[in-house]
Length: 377
Image 1: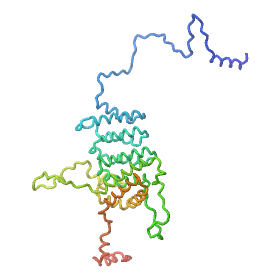
Image 2: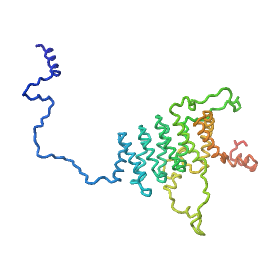
Image 3: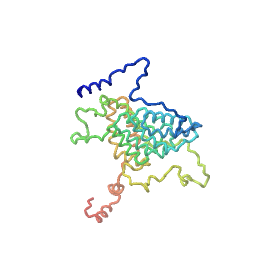
């Protein structure tokens, strides 16, 4: 028999069915394991028996550790457990762990690719007390701004909802924290594709001539699935401008002073209630630019809005009104917020030059000429 015929017969054996004979045992397969041994005992090297069930706090910490798991189902179920724990606890009872340890575990989930995880995350964030959220609003806005400019539409939509919730919970902290005013406005307008108005040709004297068309970003026929996202982001923009430009209403019935005469304004000399009250001075931090600076005063926010964003907002609001529908109505409301918030704003001018223009100080020209002979009045 040749070698080729032998190889053919060896291949055929793999597909031949074994013939069974009466009274004889079935042949064992080639990969059979011999189990004909006996053991007097079974030893388990690592055995752990829990007599008592874990406490709710231990379960809370266990589910918090599962938020970094790779499984989407584990993240969603753990977020649901934490949400139920927050809503079912008594109002006066604190959380099992500080919010400073809870929120860093939730920030990365803003950019999670699962819709169910982000939806459950929003429900959990709404259970966090606003007073505990205020010191951590800067880090929350950092992830939220990344989310509203994400390439995935679903993540941008969820980040818009989180931004709206953050503004409703802590409006003052959102617009006054480092980067909360300029950076947030910059990212929101970028996500909406609201850019500065084009330069007006000199021969038209500021009037548009000929046919005009809507920008592609505002055309309802080209929006596709971005309509809901734009509506959510417009609502967040309206809330942000209202919190930053419109002053808070004064109380109708101010509480009487609890300090008797001659004590007055004692609260101003006591220990501050908020953490790091001198954060605006940035004594030990890295230097900040205009975008990353804090702007706790309304006048500063008005000045920056007028300098960097007012022209783009007013121009795009007028374009959005022509679209109509819900998009146009919210844009018209934004225009009303801008008009109300900037009503008492006056453009800053140099007081010395203004008084010189009126002729109050005629000697300024002589003094300036002596210091700088190249000066021309």
